[in-house]
Length: 286
Picture 1 (cartoon, rainbow, N blue to C red):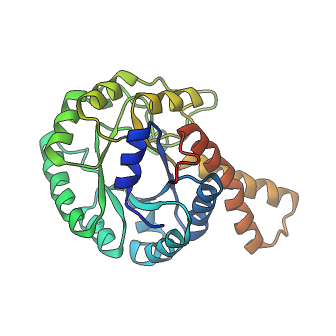
Picture 2: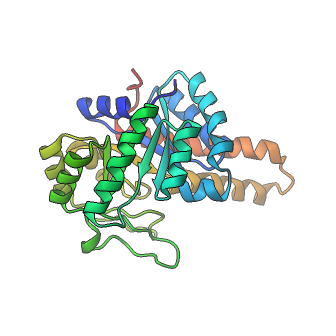
């Protein structure tokens, strides 16, 4: 079933669990995500990162096949544009059929962020789509500007509360200790759960954890307890597939390529299923 995030997250908010949002860049990855969700009887969100789809398969190519897979699934499936900072492209994604979009104007001032987001919320309503936004900045652990979340990047709860009230956004990503990408081996980030607790207590809105990969099982469980209803994971799903391909080709360099593609997303499914268990969304499809 193809849905927006709005109903999924409202149910998760009411029942105290989180829906997993897993990044994909192609149809094989999307198929693995949906299949894992069906096996766990869980709602699922396929996150398509704007920078990646513009680089590989843009929204006019990728969206409709994934929608068909979602419509055929026996669990709720949403397609969400992840970190949509190019507003013109975000609007194209809505036109192409995305059921949800993230309007990421977090680099702007809080006032400008709210103004831009409010406009997208109004536009998305005409498509029956939901909108996610971000206050604060998770940063990243890879690339030229890599760094872990530091004090000035944490979400100011008071700013976030006002933002939710002013924009009517369906869910809000908040920065309280996680970072996009992979952490060094053995590193577990420190989470400031009080940020989430204060926003949740004042607004009751669905809140989002970005950079879920590698954050640690206890951090994830506690995040759900204090009010996180959507958890983004991409890196761990991709690493599982990469490691399977590397190991398989090292053992058998002549492995059939089409079969390798199929087997790699199946290997990645185990990661998705583990996160579904951690988020509490198993058997929550209905």
